[in-house]
Figure 1 (spheres, helix red, strand yellow):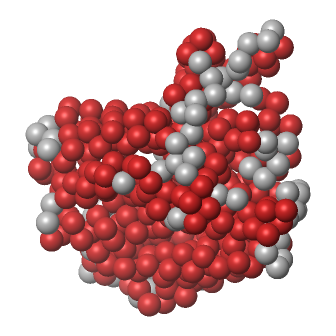
Figure 2 (cartoon, helix red, strand yellow):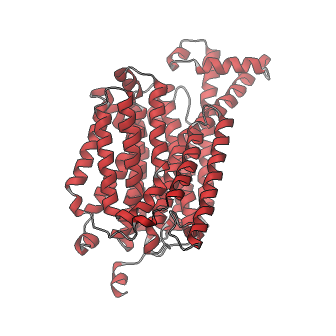
Figure 3 (cartoon, one colour):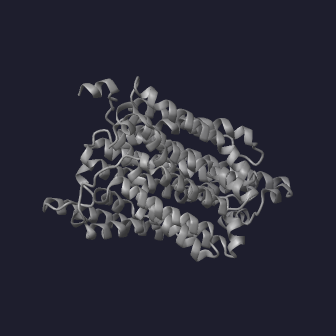
Length: 514
């Protein structure tokens, strides 16, 4: 490996971060472009949402297989293979003439490419940098995933409003070309395994388990009971996969996933923490985006603009975290980040009404993003801190699988939370403004159906004051409920951070003496 690249250059970091950035950007920018895609491809919203769901499903399902392929193919080679598949996918999606082409390009090819790149990106970083540089590099990679998700609506709003949704995929294709043009700057890593070590049976079992689990998550808002059953089935299959891998290792064979790595508390807790923080951030972003576009009737561009303070807070605090971690430690900073995020949620919980302005939401969003910046920046670093070099590939796969599952769960779970919040808001509004109908389930159901049928908040403003008051209470209570759930998730994450072992960063001068 080129020592100059390893010790002094940030170019490898920039290139792998390009990849993780566009993978995270992909779903959120398309969320605000759906209506344009529907019109352009002469299809319907549910078809496009299904394609988007399959993108998430395929990415998550291939993640563990990708982890093992790093050992057999090599980190850099697998990363570039993934980038190539992803690039073909983005070009196919950009040129889509129908929904089948969009499915092949966006869901299938980009999904597989993303699954190959995500864990290898973390592995390349952990194999390229050391000490403070490693902490900083992993902080940047983690922050960019969150930032891409946050600025997706703004990016999607710009390309859709002023150009075409196809340009979004075209920009991703150009970024892939830049990665290939500068691939020589990425350090080379020898493959440490052989094809004979590939656990085909384990790969199939893990694939089935992850498909069932993620499919259950994505179906939460459609049929909660059935989706929970599917998720439970997925967890059972994944438990069987873990037992199979343990048995395989005891027989002296190389497992697809070394389950014994999870005996390390930092990896185990850090992976769960990574899942929950992505769930909290993804869910909050989804709920606020729905509110901005459905209640305040903001354009995709203005929605992204309103979310910009959250992005800035996340970026600023993520950049600050590695420097502060040399004086404090990861555990303390992540705990502080949880508290800051909880304060941000508390501020936001009081802000959501029909008359709220963009400016009123920005302080709370900035504080929420700032807290998430601390947590997300240091989470991967501390999760991998005790893992020996030979286990880094496997460990990075475990962490990124948790991250992907969290991103998948966020929108679906918060969708259910929003529905529960709306039901609670309806009950509160009826008690306040139509007390003679209090406890009347039929009347409350009719109110719910009426609320769901509102196409624009401007329709409500044209109604009488009682209707306006009822809708205002529903909006206020449902969004407050989402913020309270997000606060609860951050409180759980806070407790989890207390179970982490502190990481002592090795200074460059110490490394030289070793």
